[in-house]
Length: 250
Image 1 (tube, rainbow, N blue to C red):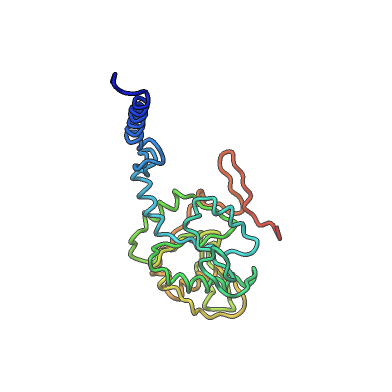
Image 2 (image 1 turned 120 degrees about the vertical axis):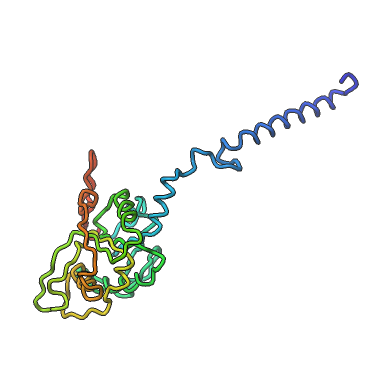
């Protein structure tokens, strides 16, 4: 290199350094988020992939009102599976009933989302959840796994029988507690969305009557929920206590 000028030497050195840097970047690309290959530590495990596929079968039917805190639920595992049921069109609403509802007219809202659920043939499972309740993710994954491809309608909740001597179509029907009921599409298919009765009635009892009328109780698999994994009004676990209850006009 004795015949080279200092300018040429600087160019050769610069090219050498650039070559070393380029080689280093290529070899270490998998170690960086901007590399062409995702870091192996960020790849989902087979278990998580399987869980995600199970949860993709689920739609969470979530009746809301102007007081519902959607921010809370969108910061939980429920976020990707929520199907908010709204009175009127609004951002994020999946089901719109086009009718103002109150606590005393929620039975009408039940008919609304029941009709809409029949359109979701790509979903195998539905969870109806109140906005003062919460449910454990692993519990839901277990239910979906256990009841996938079940051969009859499934209805999982905390069941009881209603008493309504004014309406024979409702009286004595088995229904699930409104905070949580989980069911498959086979139940949605047969639910009677044209049930007739007089007066205003509890929306959960009406859903149970719709099930009995359309599906027939002997044809339905009624399963008791596990309340260890379902929280209503408050969430308590280990060192946590979260009030999920209703705050009027907050």
